[in-house]
Image 1 (spheres, helix red, strand yellow):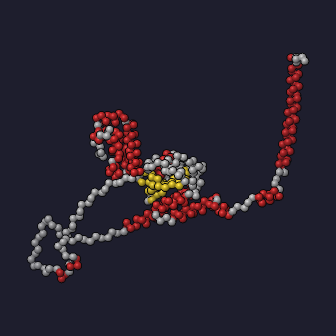
Image 2 (cartoon, one colour):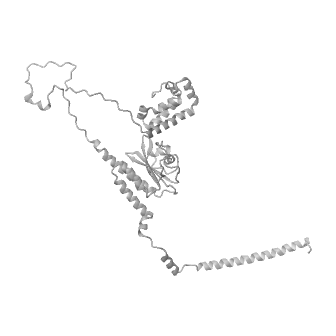
Length: 380
């Protein structure tokens, strides 16, 4: 068979093009016919009454209990039960536990932290791992959580340092959604409620959680008012202490009084008072030093190390100079006063005055344990 000649190639290409065009036209026509037939059939593709009846018979009837227990009605029933629990609490501690119990049907995980001396300490939790808490000690609130404690924000809804600090006490897993709400008494935050979605994507009923927290705050105020009521009662008056030589009040009758003397009484020495003689009370003992629980002390020592460590980190030259020549306070007065003010704001002046946690940390970390190198600090 001889090879195709070059002059025949244009003819072959023209023939191939004609055939391909014909095939494409036929395919297009066939496709249009198929689509038209399919659309016509779909117009008649409706379930008849017999099929609908069979489907209705095949679906089992839903139990009444399931209808009442699911969806919005079930959530409201759980919320109503939680309100009953909170309102019936006989004490403040029982109120907090009932709050968590009432929240269990509404949320995946929840925990309460008591706020005291600027720290948040875990009180109780529901839904977290069996080994919770993972670590002891109180939480030093980051700025976003501190704003909620101080009343600058109504709640915390975004993941950040505040949520991480709280949940790290209970779990190594952070949920996708969260709510942190304050429990307030007399405009002061006394506890924080942490709620998150666990393995789910969203907290199911954040509005019901907030309503329950408001109810718990109101109940907390009522319990506190009932607890404080005896303290506002008037104290019993103390009987006056008469001098030993004076007769009892019952004996001071007109018949018992001595007869009036015509002679004037001699003047009393200037060192005596005309008022009845009073017994001198025993000297009042100085109050005992405030006791710190181990968690609070650990948190205070940790914060002091952080504050003092920042001074050492940012001013290494002045710290080294003070370790050699002394007078650390003179070289870093503003920085030390600012750090001490932060510590006192968290834990109170009384804690530092009695336990000197911040001062001892400064001496230990910045003065090589030699208090004389601190210099004339007013709080040293």
